Length: 301
Image (cartoon, one colour):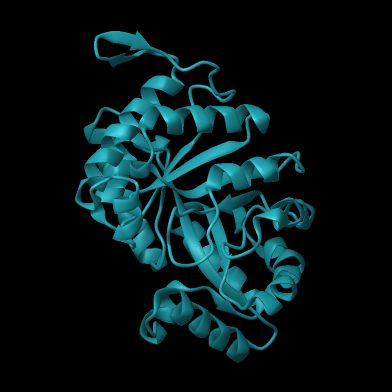
């Protein structure tokens, strides 16, 4: 199981290099960055943040989790992804999502929010074509991407989301399906749907792997971890998730969290991306616990 760490979304982007360096030193396999254009709270641009992370790391993989693909012209997203892959020496993994939580940012970018699913599907087709070095048709003129990514035939493409549409999108054109706020059973069932869709499109189902975006809280005192997770999700989503917390958020003492993450691995999640569900003041202490007492307990550690 590969384990990633989400860069603090509300942190100062100037801190990204130090945070990424420390993640690599602690033994994480990936660092991840989400993004928004206009969201009402501090958020970075994933391509820029991960380029900063690439400049100070040598081993850790770099995941956009997720790029809001419908807000980009597809060739521009392909260019930025290819450039980042080359800057990082072939360590970039492109995670995409449809967004839509804040319609204002879609309106500001001139993109109808109701078209985000179709635009994402169309963009994925363009990305696959351009990354392969093949031309796309632009008003009767063939156009190709240059330079190409280092990774062939393309950087791994993750599809984030919980809906059946995201599962089918991953099966049709992605390499990884990554849900969030789901139980291990839901991950297993969703991954089966993605693989069925892959087979329907003539792909080998084994080409689609699973991942999980895991809000996580770790503390020596399990009650403290649960309280922090509940408060963090309330602040993030604006609703009390106590009813589903135990089912979808790994939390507790290090051994409890490791055991829960192993259940996601058994469900088919080859990778898990940890989003610390704690206040900033508790983040470093939690990450020390994760590095010292959770990662060594995970499958394949």
